Image 1 (cartoon, rainbow, N blue to C red):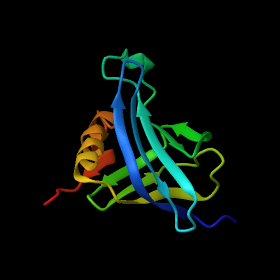
Image 2 (cartoon, rainbow, N blue to C red):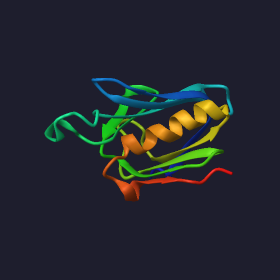
Image 3 (cartoon, rainbow, N blue to C red):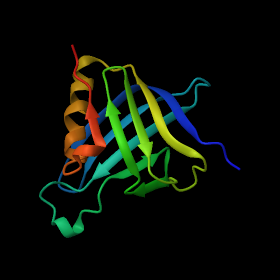
Image 4 (cartoon, helix red, strand yellow):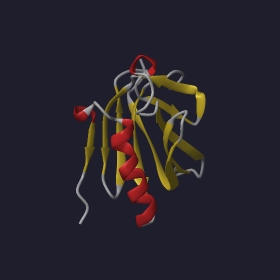
Length: 133
């Protein structure tokens, strides 16, 4: 039996990019052992035909670890992003979510903070953004 676990790393970089093909949101950084990771969320642009919108796509470290419709809950604060999965993310057996500590400057944090509601549009129960002081 696999013990459920959460993947953790510290993001020193990230961003949000919107173009005609996709909305892409990502964090990049290293875990405690120094291994580099990325976590990416993507969704079709708001202008896309709704029948072509497959929902939120999540990817961790490689396309082999990706899938649609697997984000149960996303919570962003100035210090951390927590992402809970509703099912198995491809080959990541036992992973139930991600906890990413944020080491981002204010401008980059604002960029990722403003991009998340666009990724989670129409899914108000799936996204929580904590107020910053």
